[in-house]
Image (cartoon, rainbow, N blue to C red; front, side, top):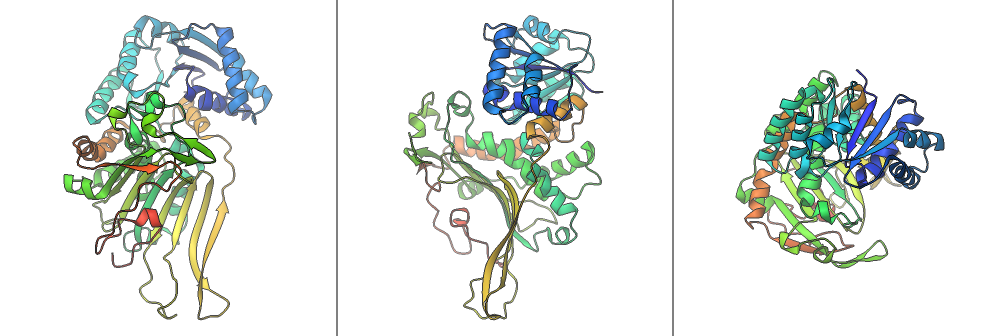
Length: 475
């Protein structure tokens, strides 16, 4: 059943203005929604419908200027506004009231989810309605479990959309396409041939006015738990029978269940946390994170997180998975890098500079590349080549794809309840050890490559990410 009514709580926030409104305009331009579609925005501001439409038009001009003007006007015209406290059942009921089902989008801080879901329960949603929640889903394992219980009392699991826009990105989906549609890759997609997988989201952006949210979350929850574990699932999952919601999501949960839990010793040796100090980034000065407006330095929130995981499975025993994300770094690096093992023998002499193959899925910008070794001008010499293909632009932005799935009732790309809990299970030992101070909070200058590399210990390459090195075949 297709829903034609969307209610957004938190409708005056950055998420709505930057992503949801342009996504709706893209859907309108593509003919995926029509004049029967309506949008109701709800927030605490004392606005009326006219002021909200003016705000929406300004946001679309700023963040969706490349979209057709007619589509932007149609989305703005479809919008209405109600002042509402998301924790007040009477206010919430007034927003969602009606005979037709409604898709309720909670564009809110995660801390408000339980109260908002409770208010929705008391407000009595129309039959057939759906709930959309942004990740991170809860603030820890216990919180995720409690939120799942609240949602189960409200709507069926099939009507809950725990969305992660990473899963709707073209290149992220191409990870599955490259693996499962190419005979040359799937037979070698295992620990016999792959030494390490790096999943990286390094960005030059600093806090950018998000202290109210970010300082309560940090890089580990905001990016690693929130997005990078999803990429891990797509890279490491067993081939599903189909891409239907049950088959795909079952295989993703299998990956998370196979992650070996880190001990305190593991956390101390396989994770890092840091925050940026003052520096120069992208031709402008960046203050130290602790000095950013709205930051409470006593929270010791990290802006850089790195975690090394291992999977206890036939396919992946012996392969390292490194998940890393940082803010205010010297360059944007957003990719999944699959590093293959070295060949067992080279007949070209021992003085050749030969690096193992690396298959890279660029996330932003979206690309696909393969680093290979080939012969140079003389047959006895070798050279390094990078074969790169840029991806065709998607027909819809990531949030457009997610909203379309919500309206059409396709939950394949949303996070199932058990998957949300398993993701927290993986990172709970890290969160606990960090809270107890077992891993120091390092610092790195804004505009740098991140924390200084650790000194490598014999038989181990702890500096791997920072020097772009490659694991030897016998590591």
